[in-house]
Image (cartoon, rainbow, N blue to C red; front, side, top):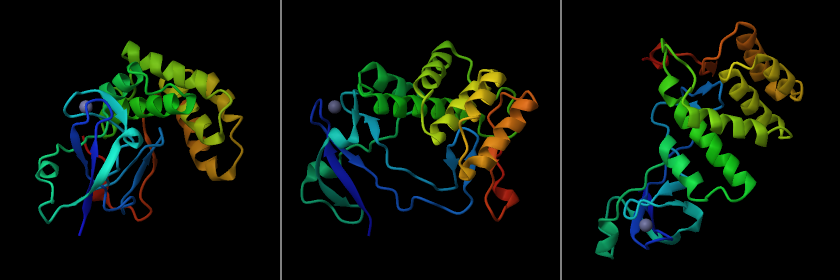
Length: 221
Ligand SMILES: [Zn+2]
C-alpha cells in the first residue's frame, strides 16, 4: 500500500499532495552527458515545487508536513482527498524559484541552476534532434552562472561545468576544466566529453546506455 505526503504551502497554507515515488532506480537507465538519468517509469520526489494554489515557489523541506494519506483509503480529513498533486519544477518553474529567492544560499542556487539546465535540455533527449543544446539568452546566462559557480567545485561538478562549456562551444575551456577530474570513477565520463569536444559536437548525448542494452529503450524522437 502506497502513501502520499500531505503538506501545506509555506506561503498560503493551502494543502497539497506529494506523490512519493515507488522506486528510485529502474532497469533500462540511460545516463546523459549532462548527468541526468532517465528510465521508463522512473519518478523522483521533487525537492522544490510551485504551489498549485498560490503559484509561488517553495522548497518541499520548508512546507508543513501534515501526514501521510493512503492511495487506497479515503483519508480521515476530507480536505486531504482533494489536495492537488505537486509537480516537479520545469525549466520556467526553476527560473521562477531562482527569481523568488529560493537560491539564497550558494548550494541551493547551484541546485536550481543545474535543475533549470537539465529541464532545458529535456527536449534534446531523443535521437535525431537537430539542435542539441540551449541557445535562448536566459538559458545561456544560466549556464554562464553555473560555470562561474563551479570553478573550484568537486569533480562531479566539474563534469557539469565541462558539459555546459561544451554546449556553449568552448572546447578549450572544457579541456582545461577536465584537467581537474582525476578520480577513476569519472574517467569514462571525462573521456566521452573529451571525445565529443574533439569531434566539435555541442549536442547533448548519451553517456551510458543500460548495461543490458535493450533496443526498445533507445531514445526516440
Ligand atoms: Zn501557496
